[in-house]
Image 1 (cartoon, rainbow, N blue to C red):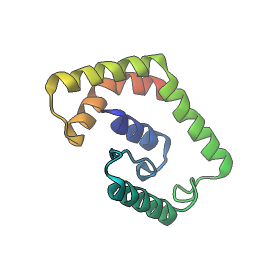
Image 2 (tube, helix red, strand yellow):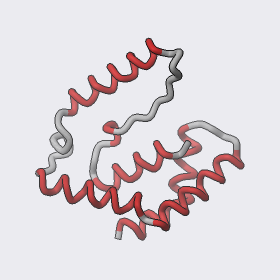
Image 3 (cartoon, rainbow, N blue to C red):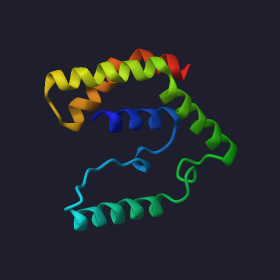
Length: 117
């Protein structure tokens, strides 16, 4: 539910383009839609080029930033605040990307700041 918002926020914080992560749902009965989603995502990644290139990062700097992203999402405080944010979204019952992103940013601000420090 809020995973997309969280991953986009972390990518933004570590300087990786948010477009590199996509999360779409398709059922087994939606083969044409699945093919379209994968084809569109592949085209966008080809346009961006190799990971780090569009961001202007050296290989070493890219590794450091990706490790920082992994450290952030592995943080117990971040995981707990994500769970609390997910509960808030379910309670609100508003399922738009904008609302979910707002809740994620609001409820997780302190834990993400701490993890980024």
